[in-house]
Length: 222
Image 1 (cartoon, helix red, strand yellow):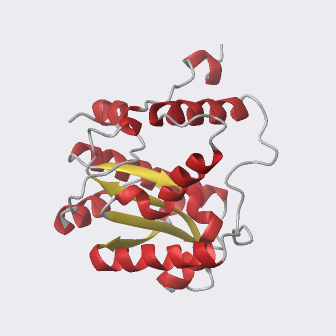
Image 2 (image 1 turned 60 degrees about the vertical axis):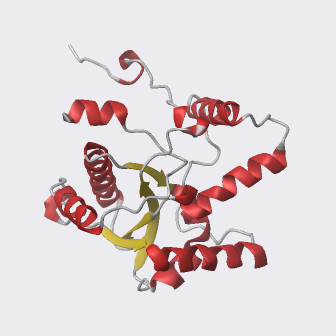
Image 3 (image 1 turned 135 degrees about the vertical axis):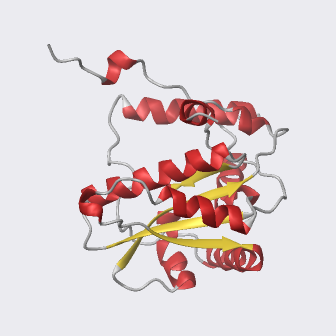
């Protein structure tokens, strides 16, 4: 698979098959993705891999937390700017409406929307979950480096027939994640990526989010 094909076909998958990810393949791709660029070669990414029984224990750990205290933890960082201004607000709204339309969930059906959102915290039943963190001393440059690693990894996964879904929602309950993973105090949770084989029958996996035309974000200076 060419890079251009992997980039075109990569999507955020929200329904996975009950099929394990081969550990040896996963290790290989995690190592390959480390060829991603980083300023000063700092390589600031830190990753925790959860599969099998450990993943089941973690999902149970989070389910217990949500049942006893659904209030989010004090935020370490803002996933979105507050308030989210245009045109970004409309972009976020539209992709959400496209997803719920595929699921057959109406705008006023709040219980169904909340139930769907809760699937985030089961990684959409993916058989593998990756948590990403960085040292708290790192700045925006190193967060950009982390994003480049994540993109490299997701493209490599796609090349090898695997799919993924990056999940910023875990920042809402970062303390529970950090507790389970025993992250040191100097480490900050960034996000997770669910990894597995896509369920081709799931309607939600037909979602292909729109992209802006080149003229909307690129200026050719003359």
